[in-house]
Image (cartoon, rainbow, N blue to C red; front, side):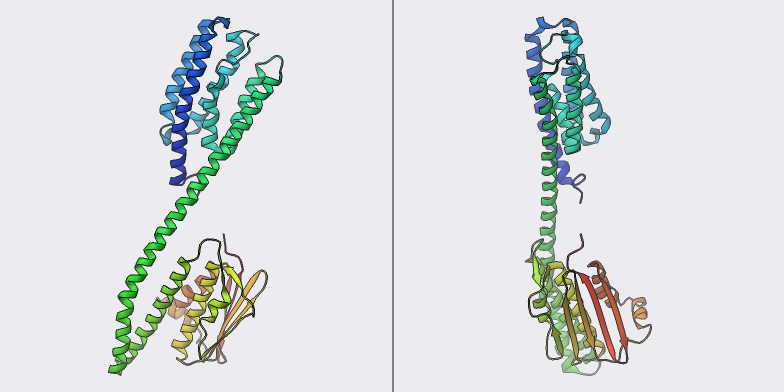
Length: 377
């Protein structure tokens, strides 16, 4: 989710423009009051009154215009900056060559900060440079005060733009985190519902199938397989919910949970810390491979899991000594809508940015997976 277009970012920007509207009124009152107090210093007082009237009218217009996101396009921003630049450049003509302060004064902050809010750091920098250039062009002699004004315009617009960027990014990240937390809570609720309902029914079907025998026994066996698969998914989901973004998990420990009498798991002797998402996905892929061994080779069929860890990648293999997979069998299963291999195995590895290679024959079946140790961005 982009921090330029997210709803949280837009909400932050709306609040900033409301604050800017209040600031515009404050600096307008200050500029008008100072100029009226010094009206006798103007060589063209009528022109000064006209300029002040323009400032009042433009402040009222921009307060209305910036209130709606749909009107905050480049034409409005460009016109806002153009008015501020014009008033700065008109200062020598209205006040005479010996003026000490500009006609708009701090009022130009409105256009400067509007660009900083809308276009962030780059917008604040561009507007600050243009306003500073116009401020310097009206001077015959540039002194330390002029330099100070120029520096404040440039650095002020840049800093405000940077702060706006940071606030909008933080708002977007918080919005994403809240959405993720809500989704995790909903998944947990669904998992509890599945656990309380579906798993109990599958366990009952499995038990009754064994008791009845015959075709019902096969139905019970299938129900048992689905129960184990669903229970594994629920446990994996519960584990994922306890891990925050950026945390790591020991892949060796995850794979060790899959070891049983007929399954041998060989891993490095030391922990292999990888991103949580990578660890859980590889464990799920391994579980899917072992389920295929149990279903298609036999409940007690032997299987071997080997993990090798390298600095930049992980290599995982799952092997059995069954009869192998007949030519075209995987394509036929996919055409029938049975997507265990294409989705549970190859799909997961592809999502991790890795490769999956299948070697099968009369000697058995072996999956070889290679994935990077870091998660894909």
